[in-house]
Image 1 (cartoon, rainbow, N blue to C red):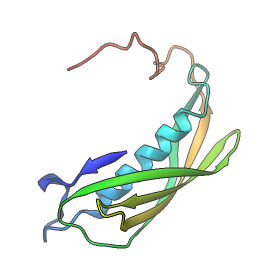
Image 2 (image 1 turned 90 degrees about the vertical axis):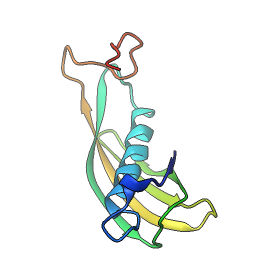
Image 3 (image 1 turned 60 degrees about the vertical axis):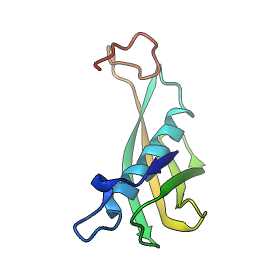
Length: 118
């Protein structure tokens, strides 16, 4: 996944807020898990995440790549690398995603009949 760094992504002294990197990391890990389960029966939820912020950024583009470390029955563990437009590491993260049974009558995010709210 890619994301441009915009004014709303910076903290008070003008650098990329670390929380933005964490949101991006958990997003790609959760999507990776969602693509590795049966969404008609299961759901994926972020369970734990950590991050090491390696390089400050003010602007540019971020690219996040999630690589599975473990794809188990009830948990998935992901290694996430976030790089800038020059392929320099900005953040490394590890995310554990819980895989749970889907309760009856809940929306499947991959269902084509989900209503649009925009």
